[in-house]
Image 1 (tube, helix red, strand yellow):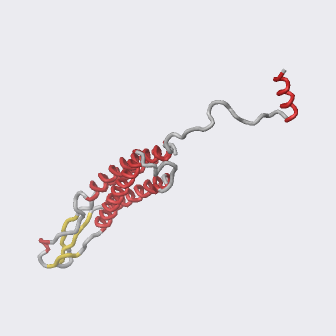
Image 2: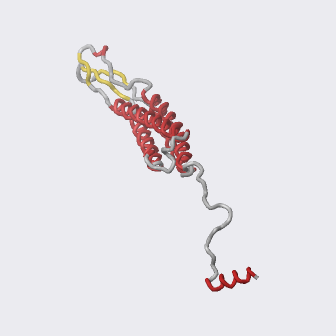
Length: 201
């Protein structure tokens, strides 16, 4: 299997867009402030935009699509002519395959956990003395970790696809019957016999 530029372009572009969205999600995390209720003694949390949740879920989906495309093309390292010949390309393909899955799962976990936590809003949390009220917000760095793991997943995926393509060629194959062509004669039997008699003269 030769390296396909279109597959590489799809995988790289999806990973990079997911990375940009994860960075955007980190920068647009929901912030909250405690506001007293104008009608009673309660205090409640007022949150800013939920853009981080949308960005995080979009990055999660794009990363999932990229991993699905890559493993669909390579058949998840299960098939191939030269994948089990013990060559250095095979070992590199297996190693990068494992790393790509570990980084992918880590990135997806950060993105989905960050999105879920960012979407969680506490409302009424205090009564009579709401000065000590703490509003639940997403901790800084969750989406950033997802973005970093997305880049690691990108590098490992490219390395895996390249090594898999090299290993799947099966190396060089020896061509038999090279040189003189030993195909059967196209002359009918009677003409071949006349030619032989002519050679004897």
